[in-house]
Length: 574
Image (cartoon, rainbow, N blue to C red):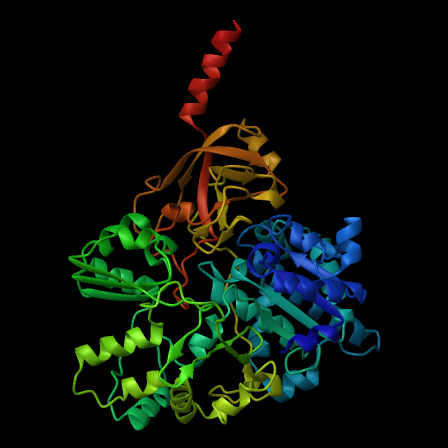
């Protein structure tokens, strides 16, 4: 789908994202949708300011009058990890509405033509929905049946629906299942490949999607590998590579001895720092290509190199003159990006130049014309075009204002699957981690503050959530505090209940200050990356390899430090 589709949707569902912090450009789009009177239904564990209202800096009246535009027309606080339950509940509602309408001689609610002509697997999905009880849906989601049915009715009445989701959907053990159920819900009413409708993943970084498009993946397909062999005259390895978790495991086990990082703060961004930090120090060689220093650079291998490089805002001059790179956004738009600032040092090289020189030094007889490719990045784009047909006329098309949109098969209702159809995929059950039997367990999600970008913390304030000068806090529903004999401001400890790969209770965060917050009951939240200590390395989505940063079963208890302080206060009072 495209940004233009937001101009034509009749309903917008937002799930598991916080645009105020992670993708502020989306706030303008949400504001425009709200101004049209379109219902915006939000499912999120926490109340987030950016999803409630937005003051646009591009609109002087709002800035001068301190007014704002309401965003969410309805806001549901779903339990952390309860998204599949909500999605199945909405789908159950649609199926019931469809049956009722047909029985009364009305029109179908499900798009039977789309289901018949474009999909497979509907019978298995319907059977799974029938077997899923409303009691279990309410328990897992933390929402009432009437709330979920109300959302289902809004969805059923809208002709064109967009579902917008972020990392609150994907960073779970069943993150892939979450996305698949979103697709199922959209397909039930033909909301894929229709103007004003579709699935809309939000990316925090400008080129997350673009990396995958040009083959930056641990599971390259034969078309990519054959293209590399054809264009560069090499025979690339055919076995699967490592995702991030597997890479750390390989380093830990001594199977990988060298690491080259292009930017990023790998060790801090990864789960399980106790394992990850120790593994990084075992490397024979660590090379970091970076614009700024970070914590990962202090984890020294036997030989460590930090190679400063140009930032994307700096002018990149090669033999053919100033260069542009290309980026792809969440809407599959590809455009050129060129820095305009004078480089911080005349000695700085670009990332492509550094990689090319490393390759030439390592493989002096290489068939790849590294120096020629780096002299003019247009030649790199020529190679991309030769491997990926969808990049036809690559260099010409990026010169157009705004760039160009890649062909997205699903948008044209072309299904590149073994069945040549879109597949309804059943996700059995609705529990994030069914092994957790402790009724006292809460589910913790890691979040980012508003003075933070990825692992970079610019300040200690989280102004939208009312936190100033600190990050050692945990957000808890007031009822969850009370049921444990706690209150706002108490010092608490968090310990992991079901801890894959280690003994329960070993992973903990201690002496955090409890903050009573408008968060779904049964859910708590604290800051990333500090809370990565709670996530075992092998606690991740088996299908995507994504660590489960947002679905950690934990216990919340008063800190022994708090008890000592309480007794001291009581003694002083007496």
